[in-house]
Amino acid sequence: MKELLKIVIVLVGSVVLAITGLFYLAAGMMTGVADEFFAAIGKQDIAAAHSYLTEDFKASTDEAALKQFLTAQALLGFEQTDWSDRHIASGLGQLDGAVITGNGAVPLKLMFLKEGGAWKINAIRLQSEETSAGLPLRMAQVALVKRAMVDFAISIRDADMKHFYSTLSRRWQRHTTPEKLGEAFADTMSKRLDLTVLEDLQPVIEPILELDEDGGVTLEGYFPTSPNRVNFEQAYVYEGLEWKLIAFGLSIRPPEEAGKIKT
Image 1 (cartoon, rainbow, N blue to C red):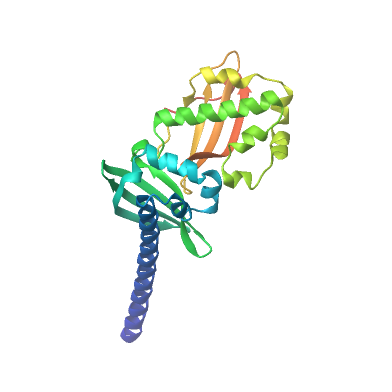
Image 2: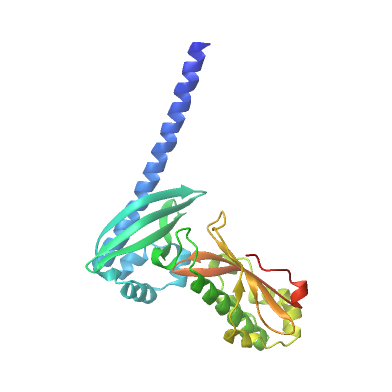
């Protein structure tokens, strides 16, 4: 019995070592991709840097847009990287750390996906623009909600969901079409509501404490319209260089029927 127990312990230990080894191998590969990406940036080779991005990232961010972002964040003056944390879960990878430039350190979070058996960068997030829990700052939440509602309002006004569709995450776009969105929001469209007035109102958003299990965030709340209240629920995932819509819902009803905002 003791010999069997020893064998089991050895086998379990071997499995743990194998898993640990695979983690460090994958983490090392992500770090290598990140360092090569920024090395290309340091050489001002934006085309080469662009090649390290996922297809979805490249589709939403061309070389000109990537260079504009890198310039705005002073990342073109890249000197070295300093990665402090590495995470891998459910096929998703993440590097936390900073890029050192001639002007100082820029705290970054890189998100990775595997494409064709290789790790690719799927998103670049500025840690200065989010809370310690990875949530967008309150001001950013308000901007996201207002932008989505205005984009939706434009399509409702034009009775054509093409504009709204163009603003969605690539993940959502792959599962819908402007025509399907038109069918889903046919009732709202038929009422010919002018929702563009929401652009001048500040939304009330329920407090959120953490990201969901997929790293996304859901923003719920309402616009203080009268006599009926415009209630919303918007879900976002981070793609490329920004949060993008992956789900959207709204209802228009009296405040007493809408429930209370959590505090």
